[in-house]
Length: 325
Image (cartoon, rainbow, N blue to C red):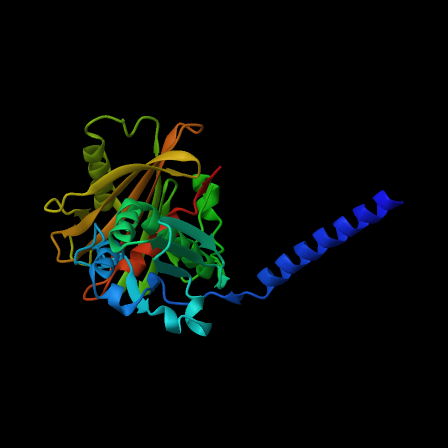
């Protein structure tokens, strides 16, 4: 009987704790804030000094692959004394806590959901700066992934209803219903959205067999392929004009994983051959070994005279939603 009572009490306490945890999660406010805007919680004195400079060098450094310099994130500095209420609800928060043991802590849904909060602590300014610099990639990746997820979540509220992409290419990809199919054939789709000063664009196509060979010339192969696709499908308003890669700007090239498959990532600037248009592009060539093919998905923006950072983040979010059958 005594054992039964103890077991019952233990179960009751566990249930109460679980219910309390669920209750706390349930009543978290929705996160807010503009895309790519990070709240930095730090004393004014530290913000105006070397710590603030280190933060700006990380969060506001120019994004590679855009025609003009644009910061990775827009920063809103908030003194700890006023960090309460509504201002705690931003999706991405970086907090600096001086006079504490050095370290970095990454938490989810602390004040709102969805939310990422990164706390950097240290006993001295140099310790804090050292941790910031050492974890630069982790900080950027954490906040950027949060924003990619948020943009995809926003677009999922009004998903497209096209079935031909899956039927012809054997893949699914998420984008909002405001996008339209501008051109298609058996192995190619051009999807676009009108924006205030131009268009946001997606190219989706497949290459059979060993169309891309991994060697020292792989970047040249990718550029040659995208230029041939541009000539065939992406014509400009002027007769004889078509999209090519801007050869005066060295593309970024790297490798990543998409849909659990190896992928080649290329970022650069596109230009209009025999025309006067241009802008940024991001290209992923995904190796689909099961189907003996490469799936290529590219996003490019035409948005003259305005910032393009958020347009490109939207395209990247769409591309990274791909699921290959």
